[in-house]
Length: 151
Image (cartoon, rainbow, N blue to C red):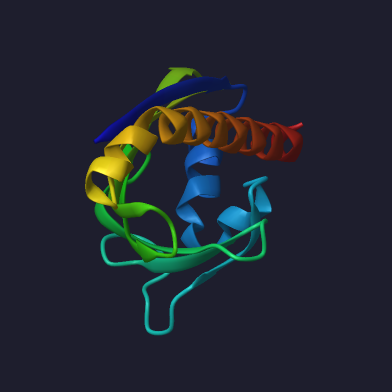
């Protein structure tokens, strides 16, 4: 199991920060590691059961995710359930906390079950570092996107 925890303070009201994450199919708008993202056919736009496809910027990697827990302006839990990555399953919990009327703390807690048995376990430290950097970039991209919109 590979676990990553990251957080960032966004200088924007919680309503604005939540709205950016709640556009589930549009994460490409602020995720620097994606070429594209879209809702899957027949998916709800958001909430439990919403599903998306994310195409990474390497041009080769695709992941599929689904919201499995959802409480507006509080949290959503997303499961990475398929894709051509060395992960069997990933669970990402996004939590928002209002710090003031103009600041929101965004926390990400992610656990990944790695493929490939013993070899996968040996890859754990490298994956932890890569996932950590990816979530830092994602949070920074979100903050920049939301702060620019409310400026």
